[in-house]
Length: 478
Image 1: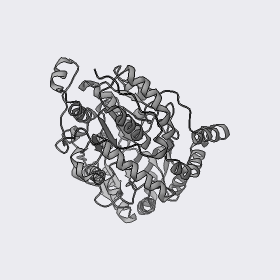
Image 2: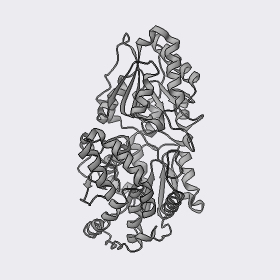
Image 3: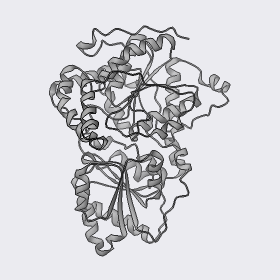
Image 4: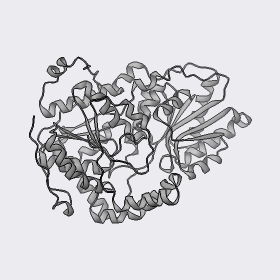
């Protein structure tokens, strides 16, 4: 499993690969995770390592940082300390983005991918593996996986937990860089034996690049882990306390359209003096700009910086309602925020603010879990009024049923990934699992399942600077 973002790195982006690694051993697949020593700009959460079973091997070889990373570390930690690291990191990344494009790297972790080749060669010679899994982002995960696949012939699953060049948040400084990214993405999608998207719409978008191999694309959504909620089931707020609307995750410019702040302000104006009875809680990351804009809404709010994943779950369950603002722009309607499924499991009313008839809104609407609106001030104020009114009269909230949540349990989703791995190596999973007393059967989702292709055509290395890279030696298969 090639994943630069992996515990002890924290944040929502690590949860998908972490949970796959946690549950794949139940399906007779023992993950070996190839990751980095440190992930710039992301928090640390060492408690996540406690979730990994002993079968999981985590490898983070010491690889010399890229020049841009080295300077970023000096600027962030040497001059301003950890608090300033994010600001300096962003400035430096924007300044070096054009250089990275001309250099042929998909991103700043291309240096790590290059440095990993010799270490992987040595490791695979001594420890043959059966398959490769990589996840986006960063794109260098897929780049490294493609090089390994082309050199070894190992089957490869490329997992896109976000779109890349078709994502509404994708930005580039030059047409040249975008063209190189598009070319690399096409080669990745061609080379991979199976390509996984996290929503049906995103899977369809990815498959357009290789329409002749559409059969190897499938959808495995994000999900939630019931074990994360076991310890916090008893948390309930007293009915006479103030109403708390919580947002857990990133609260930055990309996810907070102007209409959101206008809607919060309009709602505060409607309730007048009673606004002291409501509170907004932001838990995770919030940019200085968004915090300043929150002050203009006249909502009382609290900001709590990044907390451990368990504390994040506690905040969801302790809230009276949950706010889910989504990015706007190209293909934004295809985005299913990873935390949506934890929001559903928290059994709190959800207010989705995003594109009309987006994937998140449909899930919330179909599961009777809340309200979805566009970033329109009056629509947001109306939705808040209804949610708060229901809370005041203690009206029962139906929410997402346990049965509806079953397809999104992390064990179920790991079982779907295991099925694809079984097909790629042409093994009989039932025979193996019958021998494994710890194995469990996964409940299949009725919304997913397609058959992958085997033996996708090989392609040449992506860019000129990689043509001189030494290939990996093909390991002997057990």
